[in-house]
Image (cartoon, rainbow over all chains, first blue to last red; front, side, top):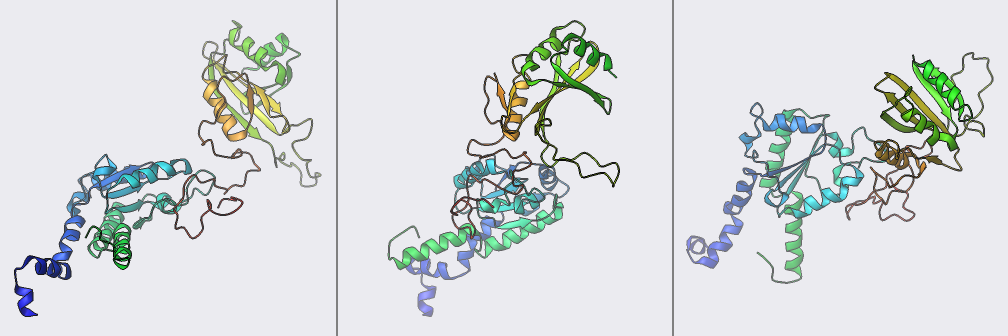
Length: 183
Length: 192
């Protein structure tokens, strides 16, 4: 056993890396370089600007770089009310993001619909896409958002994000079916 | 404030004006539905009127509406929308920049025949406002060039600002497949 672990043969090294802390390195890298896509629809956007601006400075956590294309981002921040009419657009934006991806619902409207309980507002963005972290507040304080971001980073490190779990689940299903797939 | 506008309108077109009233400093003229375009043309073009600015167009749903009871011993008021008091009131607010006057035109529209002449040919700005009124209340504007929903989607059924629309009824376009309660999959499509 000991001899196998210290060997430098490639196939054994790959097997060893999967079981050890080396496997945590991709997640470690991902959690400190979240590229966010701000899906800003309403007044919470002002608070998002505050989070992003130097006073609260989301850059301290490595998520300072908003991409204006969902294809280049891995954190979807839903900032504001989502209406039923917007649902297809939101789903499309989410589908365009590359795996792995995470979603943060910013404010009560994005989380539950907030005080809009009527014909036009969607009762939470999670009706359309899976949401990883919900931030309550109308609007939330910037500290809450940073707290949620740290929560999300822990979750990314542990591989507990929705898309990570989905990838894992699909891998297990593929393994059981004994089909060769991507890693 | 501009009672003289109401007086001049009543004098010029007596057959078209049902009655006039003033409330909270705003002059209101109740117009017969069939002569609305005639009244509006007069208000726009007559040199004594010159109502050049269309302010808004909207509708009031008088379902469940009761006048305020002054005395608690008064008998309960009758249902507000009867034959002589139809359910909908279409409102047009106009302003004259030249003469600094305002006027509000109201047209009574019954529930069984929700139609009203369109004023978008006279003031182009009423085009979208009438579409919004149609979207929310279902008033058909006769002569409107493009009467479609403006805010809601084509799949929406009903008119949400009518008082008899269920206030929390949603009509979703898209939902996740794995929702425990999925209104798109439920039979009868009652919504949430």
